[in-house]
Length: 57
Image 1 (cartoon, rainbow, N blue to C red):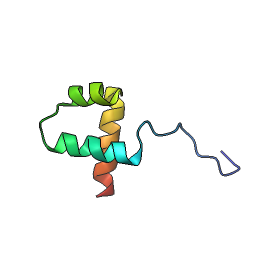
Image 2: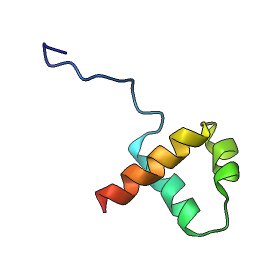
Image 3: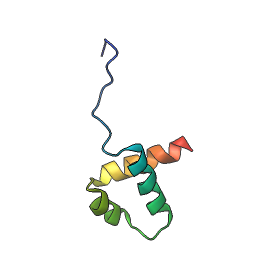
């Protein structure tokens, strides 16, 4: 892991997209399945994004 390199890939969503995904989920108008389709992401990616956004609060 040396030389200052982070492990893992680039985030699927930008900061703005992650915030919008979280906002849409909070309104309870959109299910996780809707968000998966809308953001072209996998189910684990959506749940990971929601968890990361919740942890930032």
